[in-house]
Image (cartoon, rainbow, N blue to C red):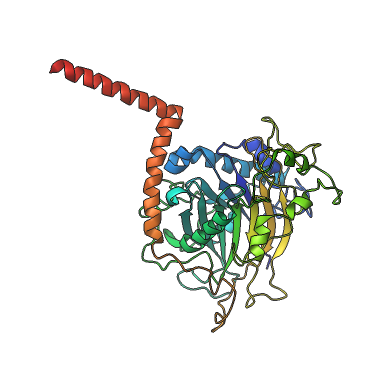
Length: 470
């Protein structure tokens, strides 16, 4: 039984649309070098089974808060990029084994997209979704969105009649509070995610056979980009589940925004920013700056991302870059072009939760590939970060009876209880997002300006006509 290969990418888009061809040419550069690009093996075995994109600032505020068709062009660019990357990876072996788009969800400016090979798309039996805003008034300028997939069990394994009890994998895309002095606020954002990122089965997504091989999955009448929560999107009678679940793999990817210093840089600090060098004794090697990484410190202290782990970082900081508008750049260039007013930091991270003690065996383990930063894209001041790995296809079993007693595993004893008011808080925040989105659309976009001017002219004309008749 082969493992399930995953490829997770996190990217802060800086509210700009990507260039699909350019993004595609760099997308799969974190795949293990065991099989060469364009190998033409005819079955796509070297490409991952599932591709997950965690996107922050996916679109301008107006488009992200309004959602629906306003977000479609931004998502379409990523769909095209994944398809182009798949074609390039297969090389001359054009088998038609392209990725199927499984689901896209967003909460405000944070989004997640899941793609799978056709055979894996057919294996998806159910999908749970979740979303929470942690920005101003709990709106989605910051926050998290999650997708939990139930996959086919190995042949011959007993499955529950409703499709539950299958191998499960949870992906969470997140964007936490910014700025060097915002470490405590980031920890508070994580607490809000742990308390209010509640997964609910989507109506119509407990599937009798499969999601489908080539069709796009629509979760609501307004289209698959409709923001959470939308009326009729989830099954309100189902029991809520938090981010931690004893039988699910868990991956957290996003702009977590943890910095390398607790205060903004001074003018002279810029001279010490990292630059390309293989000499770790060189004071400008990025490893020296990594020693002050806030996320590493907070993880060790147990104040954030409880139970999650990260592979060692061996790539330059992912933020904040100033790059040329025409071409990407990487750490092999002569000079890394940093913004002077921010400490270079590893804001963009991908964390995972290892197998629980009741599941780990010699023949059941997570196999890690590569964890690295991709090239700087000319449309953003962040570098994308990618993580390749494989997980067992066998489901994680239920913990033995009494295992939760005294256990420090957050899957058994979560660090925070679920907020019983999570649904009401998200609904109120969603209404605020619509209002803010409409105002931003009218005031910050040329289309909205045209509508606003037309309304003003119409009202003025109506007032003039009415006055003339009186």
